[in-house]
Image (tube, rainbow, N blue to C red):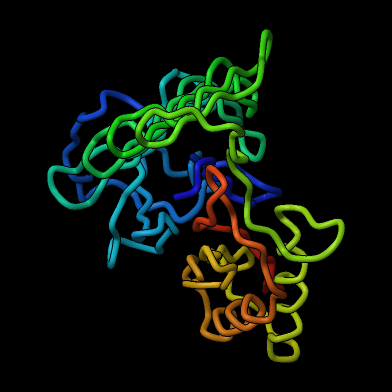
Length: 276
């Protein structure tokens, strides 16, 4: 799973701690479903559903995980994100905190990720979206994998194998999937999807009221292949087809890596279509 749940919404939004075996009740039906982080302020306390790869879904059908967002102050500037498994006992798999207002919300404070059995996979802290303090990652057997100090007094990372033997060199901690080629960056797919969506719409098309902004998501698997492209917003069929077609036309990607190994990465974005 990707370590930093970075969501390129409204210009690269972010996404993604508590006791390792903390449990939660399944989300109550009345809670509003949110499809993007941009909906957060409009639907506080909402639930966001995700598939087995942590890619967002438009609703609960087929969900393996769900996110719950909670305000932790009275003015709506500080938030807590907790991610749980849908299946009982609803194991906590991720918790992070962030602050600010959209589109400038940033990770701030402690963060931990867990394996499905509740063992800690990673623990660190953020300050203004950057690593702060000490990053620690762990193998499934509980053996420390990486210890890396950040910020003041930072030094070289120390890594071991699953038996505790020191490694001569630490692999790169984490990289994001990105389009192949020169001068690429993580969110470079946003512009071509926007352009190709407009081209694929019927001539003179106008979206119904309230459908001018359309959210979508897809996954880049460990081979670099594009998977599970989906439109998250409820939109006219013409718009959904145009967005899917635009995503399918994206060039090749280089996969994300975690601890030197290729891994899945979830990318999110939105397009604007002509309105009434």
